[in-house]
Image (cartoon, rainbow, N blue to C red; front, side, top):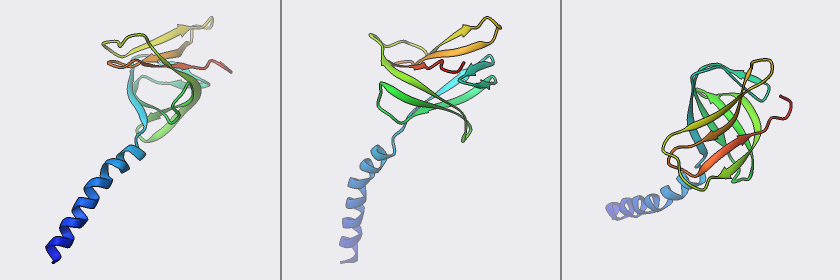
Length: 121
C-alpha cells in the first residue's frame, strides 16, 4: 500500500512540475559587452550581463543583471523582427560627447528584439 501511495505522489509531482516551471519562466538572455556603454543613466563596464523583462510587450521594463545584482533598469519596447538572425546583435550609438549608448538588442535564433528607451540620456 505504501508503494502505491509513493507512486501516486510521484505521478502527481510529475504532472505539477511543468506547470511550476512555466509559472517561473522569465524572459531573459545573456549579453556580452566588449565596450563600456550607457544604459539609461548607468554606465555598464565590459562583461557578461543577464537581460531580463517580465512583461509580454510591447512596453517592457528591462533589467540588466551582473551576477545576481540588478545594475541597471530602463524602459523599452519588445519588437518582433521579420526574420530570425543567426547571432546576437547590439546597436550602439555614439553621442556628441563620445559616450556609447546601447539602443537595441537582437537575439540570435529568435525574432525578438529589445529597443531601449533613451529618455533622460
